[in-house]
Image 1 (spheres, rainbow, N blue to C red):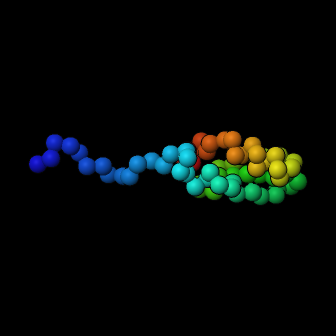
Image 2 (cartoon, rainbow, N blue to C red):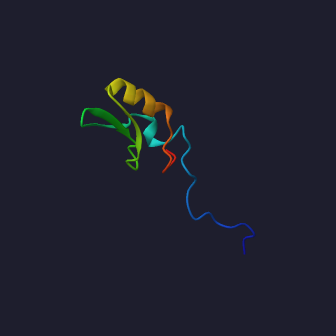
Image 3 (cartoon, rainbow, N blue to C red):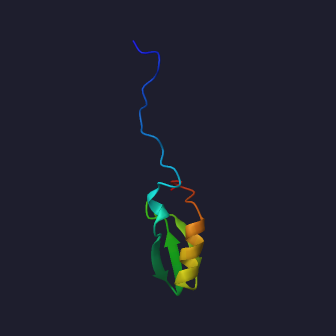
Length: 67
């Protein structure tokens, strides 16, 4: 018998190893660029220029999956 419990899931991904650290998913909707989390699709930022949407999304962490 083991005194320690076995982990049921692996460790949660950290911010540095999360897949969203690369590029956010970008969409052009009704004249605005929308940057979304590539893992779960949650909207991270929206802006009139693609560059600004990318920059803003890069600084934000996804509130849903924490990627």
